[in-house]
Image 1 (cartoon, helix red, strand yellow):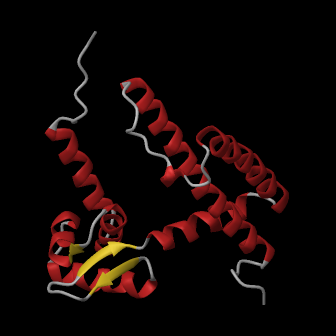
Image 2 (spheres, one colour; image 1 turned 60 degrees about the vertical axis):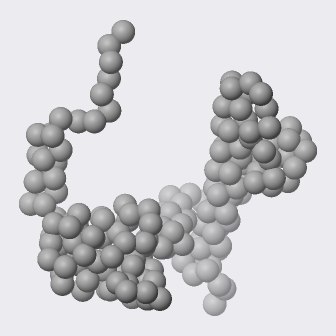
Length: 178
């Protein structure tokens, strides 16, 4: 058996980073960084990752905040930014509404709800957060329960996305009827 190192060689990382820098303008790099951050981050930190000046990063991340793609926490100094997951959900739902018919969406939701019902019956709960995954003694049983709860949470998320896509489709791209 061979050992696999999940970390690519530094020269490969540098090649990808150089290509990204050369192929994307500053706004695109800041956008990519904002979509990749998982916690509130200052514009200076975003600038470092996006390989641009702090002033350029601040200008672009403020624009992203105005567009609703990012959120700005102005309660402290420096201002910290994070991606707006609601925006990403809306974007994904819009894509689904373009790719699927209303009937296909309803069919997928029905299948997801059937699977969700199986989890509810299996765990005797209607919410995956109510299921404790660590109250078992067996490592494999804990792992299996963690996988099941994760799948259940994904199903709940997918049902919300498909419902949003159905509303967008039903209302000609709008969330609310005209």
